[in-house]
Amino acid sequence: MYHKTLWRSAILSVCAMAAMSMAHAAPESTDTHQLISGDRVVLGIVEEVRSDQARINTGEMQPRFVPMNVRKDKGLPDLKKGDAVEITINDQNLLVDVHMPGESNRHRIVGGQLASPMETGHDKAVIRTPNGEEESHLVRPVARSKVASIPVGADVIFLLDELDKIVDVTFADKEAVEHAAGLSQKKSPIKGNLARVTGVIVTPLRNNTIVIQTKDGKTESYEVRSLIQERLKTLSKGDAAVLFVDQERKVTDVAFVPDEHK
Image (cartoon, rainbow, N blue to C red; front, side, top):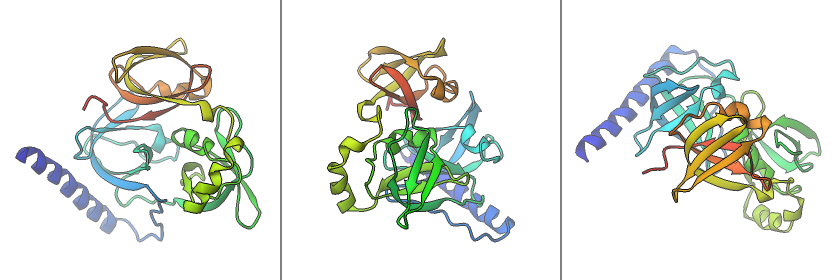
């Protein structure tokens, strides 16, 4: 236990020194790391990069896995073994974003409501701002299920990344949560019936199908919808993940999580 505590402290120390070093080396920026309620930042060190995802040691009991396309889509440099990183996690303990210390971060917060239910696939949402204007934004895969669960007309706060894509959402306040309860019939289709299947991948994506072993030891096979297949290709045998399965028993979304065998 003593050695484990020392190792965790060492990781945080390395991250802190890397952040200070990069902050001094980089020009001053007015960018701020904006977050919404429930989000938090975890520091870590990249231990390995394989299968288009990085394994990151944060000093927790299990490593975290970050898909490389989260950074690639923004034109940011690929992560390498030994890099210090800052991982933003939402209130469901799922990845929101990942940056290197001192890296430009232009997240912004937008308050408003969903103007209409999201279409099947949940890859785009229309936000109606308090002044009545409507903005259309793409939704990153990790946030699709969460955004689709928001009823139309509920007051919420959206977190947008550097590409103006929605990466997280939360209710504006307690009153908004209570109001949303009466708007449940206005949720986006399919999301209301999504099931979360947590486990370890037994057979990676093959012929549009993926096989996962759940916590209770059962092996389940699911067809994967085309819109999410690119993300599923990053999963390898033994990787832990959460599959979001619709009423037709098809995977519509996925979240990468630490190994569930704790």
